[in-house]
Image 1 (cartoon, one colour):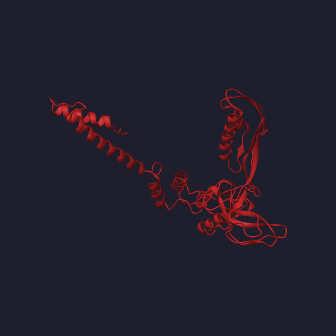
Image 2 (cartoon, one colour):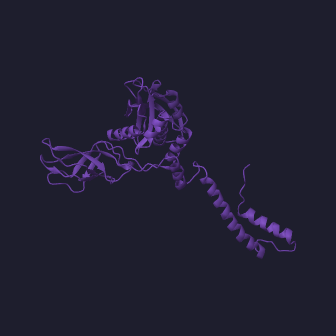
Image 3 (cartoon, helix red, strand yellow):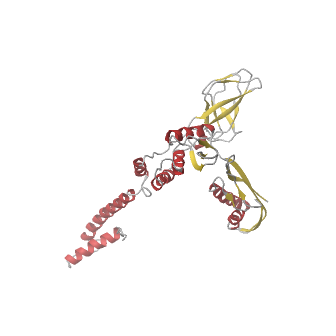
Length: 353
């Protein structure tokens, strides 16, 4: 049976009612001496009730605040994943033979800074591709290839403008929702000597891993394949190697045929023609369509199917959309998972006319 916690007014009224019952001749108006005393006691009592409510929320991990959630997780051997640093390459240009020292810094137009992790020399073709890392950890370091960079101090013979390769693997410190999900998964799926839930949990313990799927026997008897996705996209080779090393340290010694890989991202373009709107703008409708479709594709798993009718219904449900023709996809699209393929469907952009 639930307990209804009284608020300030209810507590004060109860105090004044008890005083009036005990001393019928007393003045118990809110501006009386008894009223002032009752208000002070009610305020203090309400604070105690609020503190008790806070304590109750810490009793179970799904309602606990961050500090107590971390303590709950620690009891089960789970710790919050720390932020990780994005890694990639920078393409420098300049005079052949010009030296690029280790630690050379370059930044994007929004101030995300990178530095080279090794020394290099401009090649005869006037360029050098140098391994680099983000200066600060976090998902902000993930940058697509071709992003313009500006060197903070260009070495002699090296141009002050550079271009990034793909930077990936950066992740922010784990949020409470993710930590709670891993804790609940640990509670609900107890370790079982290397079942698929164990492999999934081990993979997601690595910083930078956003999701993981396990495919037992994909390559034959005795094999276990773990497919991982990084925060913001496909995993880097370094992240895959880190996950593999962590799982090798946890798995049963007999489960030696274990592979970690990233999925083959398969874009599904959405093409809408003949769009008719009423009471909304094209920009507003386009933004809503992109948001809904991105959320839908984020729910898909390797081997999953993007249903054409689902895509169409999500568009028609948008307020202001009167009519349209979904030209692509023309049919349901299913990703392949077999001994040689692990595909994951992604949103390939939305085109509207």
